[in-house]
Length: 340
Image (cartoon, rainbow, N blue to C red):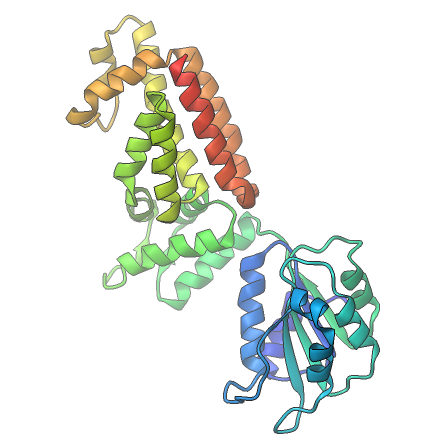
């Protein structure tokens, strides 16, 4: 039968269940993993050295007998047996469904699934079967992410104001794992401060300063048309934990500077005079490189670049799985335009 997240929380708090099967599925992998681990910790005895390890659905399909034997055998110390199963983003669950058709009174299957289509065999079957629970976990929205940040902060005696929360979401995207990493970095930095009230300035100091030098180097390389250098820098930044929305945010800020200078030049100012309008000012060692970028980017090219980045900004936040490929595509496109 279908259930809700609260049903899982109730089982975790009770530390027991008589259900034959519990399936957590959906695109919100962070929340699924979090509750699945809590569920397993609550129901399984950590001291039971004879407890079976987690089954993988692909391994079960290859050797169903071992899975059946484990499921139908009694728990070593009596009581209920709980078996963990990782669906591994697969929808092939024939052996699992075959087992559930049998009378397994003393065994509960705890299944961690990924995205399952409405036509998925296991999804349709478990929704109809009695004494089972199937709970979907959908992608986060702005409301659920704000709640997540506030609850996480309160557990560590921190408080984030609305501007700080909006800034974190803007820079991290709509992927809960990225939001979690960002909040953890901020709280770690201010852990020993007496004032644990986080505003936009404090949050930005941590999130924007992370790898800022390399990010500036990336923006410069892209605008100078140095495709290979740009790709190498972006790979390093990805490995260091920079998120796709952070790439987009940095690029938008950089092209806004080029846009400001371009407008000032059109109004009759020299390049040097136009650059003086940028706040904060360009670092003196980067002035010549920035002048070269201005020559590569007229106002029309900058306008088009900002259009592309604004469109991509929403995609990186709503479709985190495409983030890295989107950034790679943007780097190629913008670096090629810089050469023309």
